[in-house]
Image (cartoon, rainbow, N blue to C red; front, side, top):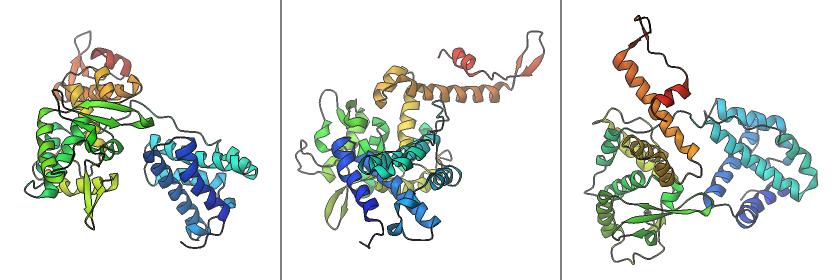
Length: 346
């Protein structure tokens, strides 16, 4: 490790991630990982602005102006979504609040940066999801005659069936699987909350085939990772970066048979897709909400809204026009979203 110029800054950073967040805030490993990634990006940005290395960044370089620039960079260059922008801003504010609590001289800096407001997040923003044909094409893409192909296919099927968040998938252990009259998996979600999700019969078949190869002879009650990769003959729990890389392998293969497979996919698309397909096949939104582990039903309404927009597009494409009261033809142009949702019984 290179010599740092501002030891106090990096000592506070270390204590923030190793002591404060896990011990005092009871933050999940996933939250800590995301906060660490954001702070690294922040420091790298500041280092580049000052034409220096990250280890030479000092507290005086952390200013309101450079923080505003960093947030603008995320939005304008990296094209992050409003929710992601707010999360990254919260990570920076969180660290500076901690630093100001440890050192009074940083209170003014925290006060200034805390004035940067979060942007409005539209809970009914566009939802990206995969068609059922695209899902099937992705499932068919791996070569299941190989162990890696068998694992990757099972992983995608498991991700889709459970509708789990990526950190919930990577956190599943063998002991979380239950084969019974109702086959289930226990998922460990946000805020250390758990929920039990049923597994479909086809998923169970693929899962048992996977277990026979990757967990042969193991105690199914063991607290070992369900999905893992082998590095230097050691079994390492798969992380979100590894899963993203594996998904990218199958995109061009799936696109050969299904043009609706997008060029870029990410794990959360499986969660969105499962939720949308359940809703489109008639599952009540309150049940979809429970399935996804949403704290508020309003969060789940985004799928109903997205499906309504999809229906509207289909109607406009099929009909093109509608009749006015006087019998004249005019374009179908319902613009009021509340009226539109009401038309579809929302």
